[in-house]
Amino acid sequence: MTDTLDQTSTVTYADGQGSADITVAVIGAGGKMGQRVSNNLAKSSYSVLYSEASPNGVAHIESLGRTVTPTDEAVKDADVVILAVPDVVLGKVSESVVPAMKSGAIILTLDPAAAYAGLLLAREDIHYAVAHPCHPSVFLERTTKEEWADTFGGVAAPQEVIAALEGVDETSPVRTLATQVISTIYAPVIAVHYVTVKQLAVLEPTLVETIACMIGDFLKEALDETVNGVGVPFEAARAMLYGHTWIALTNGLRGSNPFSDACHIAMDYGREALIKPDWKRIFNDDDLDTVIAKMLKIDAVKR
Image 1 (tube, rainbow, N blue to C red):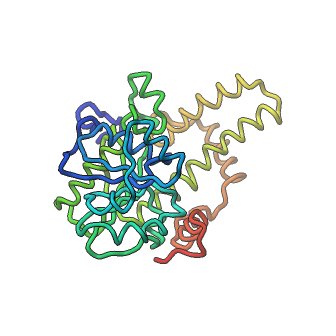
Image 2: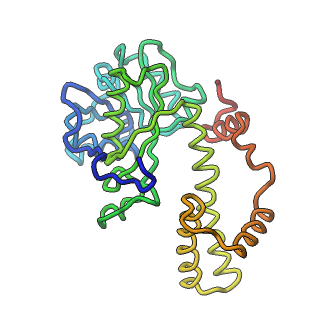
Image 3: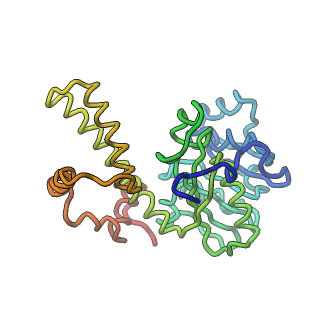
């Protein structure tokens, strides 16, 4: 995979993927993420069972012509069980789902926090997987309006996925099945990269939420202050920020063009004014445990 994300011959699409011999159960199919993964699974050849507890979610699923299956029935024969429910209830949901799963099945969560925190009910004869989408890259070579409109991924713009499936050899049929299902629910997918559960937790939240998403939100605050606090016309401030954000990313992440000497002086001033000298501590285990505990609204992780 090159840095230009050339996806011409590597993308996996949802249409027709999988086999009817494989059953995939989606728990929470009427929720935000449940709807996303269900929409792609509905395009595939997998035998898909949709489970949902909320009345609104059930109504939405049925409005799409899909049948809602009680959770205990959906789980018992499923080869892959996807828990598409909020992180804060994953532990509780796993307590009812895991005992009902058949031996050798895969339970797949869509975020690493609960798995890292040790909240999922443990069972030795099933496999635990986590898979989180990277979302379409800012450097993705988009060619259609649909790809440009798909900022989240899972619809038209190809993306990469990070997954964890510990204790399973990369040549195992379990790994193959997990990759196939993951590539389907997040399709179109360029590649699935495997890491450990802890490494995935470092990627999200630390790298992309604690840092990248915070910076994105901070840029909006800076734009608002430039307009409302200083009085610069919005169109001028927006044009300057949007264009220079692209330059900052291409220069900083890809070295496309060197920053000027004057820019480096301003950058150093900004770093001294805004960034704490000990900022890298957020990569320490204790800080990772703290932020995940806050996200899951628990006293402490159980690792």
